[in-house]
Image 1 (tube, rainbow, N blue to C red):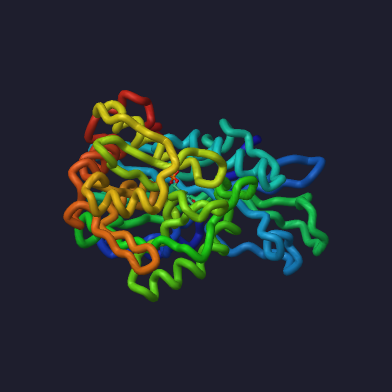
Image 2: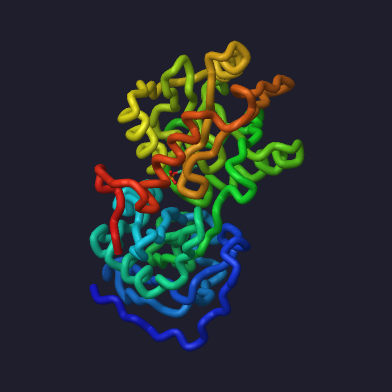
Length: 354
Ligand SMILES: *Cc1c(COP(=O)(O)O)cnc(C)c1O
């Protein structure tokens, strides 16, 4: 399939000061779009000016949330090169998400080509200040206009781009986390490992309650026993416990993060033992108090690595380590971002230059 390139007639005004970039509020001049019709497959691939869509009010996505998305970044290296980080991992996950929600897969090679072409055209939108990047949001929505519950016969797949600032403006700062005992995020057999908007809609109330109490994020427990740690908001979570790295296993209820996978690989190479196992909330809180739990950090594309300083469950609050950024947390953050920004060699072939 060819990609039609449409001209941009009214370029946007840009934010001059890269330090003022806010996550996901500004979008570039162009977007990639393609359409799907049952019987015809994907067609009308184009890179067109960024613009609103016109959707029928009965479009299935608006009623039954048949929607999936991805999140990855393009980085500007010091020599001017532009690099994606493990993009095929995201594209493959996009297709796994599509399958779970009865949506049509995209051709993986074609999708990478489209992504690269879009970024090449928008390359002057990639910021260059320390810690900044271009956030990439592939999305697929069900557009058939019908109120019956069924998989759609029509879809839109698109990619939008947003220049984003350094996640940690005031420096690398530990977050305060609230462990929810009332709400759950996903259950076995559900959509916990699917990157879909519906999961996020269901998580908003807990996140709002946590924010009202002064917490930055919610840590979810498992749905069956309400006892074992799953993940945080939009991040996987890792612990440095008894000198080993402990993280929740991939049993279908948590997102299989690209950052998680990369961090576990780097930590293994640093000589750490990895335990993918269930960690109960009691073990976690007791560990923080006894010192067996030395560090905790979230992993995800947006923040890369996010240090956790404090945990609260019911009326119990514990501080992790001295409440500051842990040594290993910082080391892993630096190791991964050094590869992403091309400051260190990339022995794993994670970086894909454009
Ligand atoms: C996207 C996401 C993550 C992190 O995945 P990465 O591939 O590392 O960005 C973790 N948890 C949830 C719920 C997510 O949606």
